Length: 290
Image (tube, rainbow, N blue to C red; front, side, top):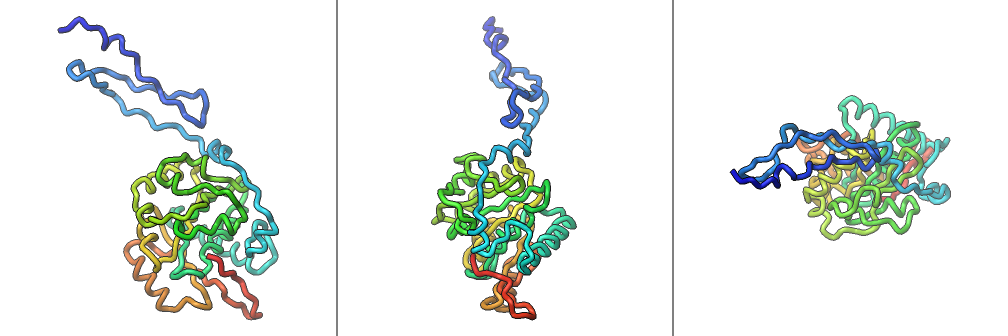
């Protein structure tokens, strides 16, 4: 046997350090070496990196949303006596009950065609969910071809969400935080190859990492129209269910049936929301963005 002592003098592998609990080290697995190959052999699996979601939320850049801009777009950042605001609070309760029953948290918000108001519904639902104390809601703009959430919310100079989805940028570089309960994954740059980006395994890995790091109660994904492309189906493995937004002035029963056929065996439909519906007093409850 060689008298070379390099294996004995090799320094032990350093323990990983959590980015979110400074100074805390992970327990180190016992290590031996295969003298024939020089490879390290771990006698026990390495423990996962410790993540503190509360610290991750605090690391997100806070943003201020102008109330006048939100109200002008039919959005309700605070509780309101408006019938539309009450309707979204009712939708919030029904969604939460449906999710609790199934233990779901990843919801896609889509529509049969363009112009049904899915972005408007997704944003108002997210704002309503975020009004609950000590809650955690994430709103993602995954309509990569036609991102609208940043404009709806009145935010400029929004980074490209694709840089997070493909793993080039960390979560805290892209996501923003409104208040203490709403994380925003907005998109400032349309993506030409949207379906391919959503099919990319890096996208699924990034969305899974987001769940681990933020530990939200619910994630709302603003998706493209279901019948316009295969983008929604591309993201189906990363969703638990979809919320289908229809337009009272343009959606047809056949549109809804086509969506039901599309999702059959792939994604459950959590519910169908009728936008631009009129109540008995002929007052509109919806707006037509998205």
